[in-house]
Amino acid sequence: MERAHGVNALSGASSGFIANPGIVLSRGLDALGSFFRVKAQAGVREPAVAELVLFQPSILVWNLGRAAAMQQGMLRYVTSSVAFACLCVSADGTLPGQAPTPPKPNIIMIVADDLGYADLGCQGSQVHRTPNLDTLASRGTRMTSFYVSQAVCSASRAAFLTGCQANRVSMQGALNHTSREGIHPDEVLLPELLKAQGYVCGVFGKWHLGTTPMFSPLKHGFDEFWGIPYSNDNSKFHPSLAAEMPPLPLYEDEKVVETDPDQSQFTRRITEKAVSFIRRHEKMPFFLYVPHVMPHVPIFASERFKGKSPHGLYADVVEELDWSVGLILAAVQQAGVAENTVVMFFSDNGPFLSYGNHAGRAQPLREGKLTSYDGGVRVPFLIQWPGKIPAARVCDEPVTAMDLLPTLAAWLGAPLPDRKMDGKDIGPLLLGRDGASSPHESIVFYAGDELQAIRSGPWKLHLAHPYITVMGEPGRDGKPSQWESMKPASITQSGIAGIATRHGYQVAQQAEALYDLTQDPAESVDVSAQHPEVVAKLKAYAEAWRLELGDSLSGVKGKAVRPAGRDAP
Image (cartoon, rainbow, N blue to C red; front, side, top):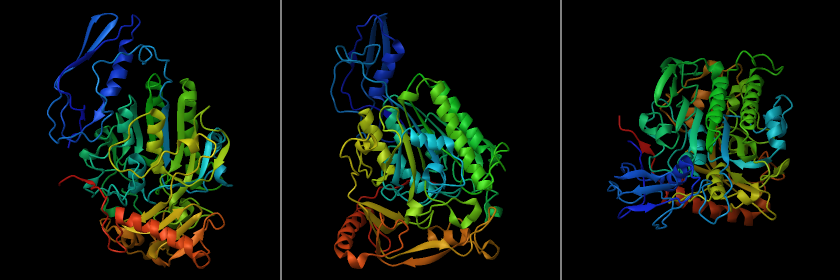
């Protein structure tokens, strides 16, 4: 299904002019284009007439004719409902009489895959050398209670790119080559919001929000894409199902340009694409999204880094990721836009613990990827914006990756999508405003369709639920725990039972328990008996979330769940 841009219904033509002898045509186009570049429902055609007429060197006339009839009816995302007759734009993009507005900040979002909470030097690692990430932390703010929606790839990415809980947009779990589902065309992703503000948007790395053409990044706001559609183990390197895996496709935009590419070159090639994007678009606001393939198993490092760390291949991989961050930061500096660029770094979820020496560490947190314990959903988060975000600051207020979209929108003065969101504006907190605190009364944690835990302030309540834990001794050198005796279920069998059989886990049971995360980040000492009033409060929060988003453990269907997209076979 093709996605189109549209405009709010206009009953007739309107015109405007620019009375400025020094007008820069491209700037006028950018400003006007940003105003009109809005999202319409899937299937909406472009306006019937949209023409530019220059009849004097100093005058630009924008003549927008009657909009085409909407196939689906009303708009799903509009920049504003403000009626206007004309729009006068000067060379610096301002209205006559107004002071020049600051340029829009560039935005760089770098996301590691399955990186552990304790895998960076600034997070306490004694084995990984990460000088560039440590510098990023020292020049900005490090959030130590930063949460993702679910501890698995597709769900986490769907959440931070929409500002919604993964369950609200029906994107639980992780997609694979058999999946026909993906992010729904009606959902408004961060690049779409930014594109409406005049940004050019590029993504280089792992997409993982849909594998068929209708889910292409180019249909969801990005102008450029280079990377893979799902995880790198969905290939001949799968630890237990390699024989049934197809070749791993590598895309450039919407075309497969390679199959089974050399995975040791992923980090280098992604970095080169990212640096090129910065250099090509340094004169306009850009959104650069770098969802790295590594360190998701199978892990690979290029020859330049392989064997260079005394702590093994995983350390090599992390150090190459750090090198990548350094080159991206250097490119921003060389382009002369560092002072006006927001750079953030985080992981999509916690480490894949069953893989032992090929996995990260989450200490002092409990468990890792695929669980609702903090080791799965609490990840490193670093952000810098020179002169705006305080340097060398550490903040432990609980916030989420879903907060990034509404925060960036607020910084830009951009309207939010006209649909329910779960993220909150954490701008005051990130900017170090006096008295700023987390805007979240509660943060809920799902595993698939199961509502498993909820945090409020320092407290985290686990409801009774199953979870997966490493079956025995963690695996080594790319193989999961108990690999020799595994009986893997088909990749089409989702849920924790199926996942456990393919990755060396077993299913255990968590009883209802309350933890004080400030005193017990390992979630090991149940204090529910001492704080029954806190348990009651968090259960009330959980019930509200259950009614909104559902809960398969209690058989409740959510009343505010939106569908995923589906591409018919």
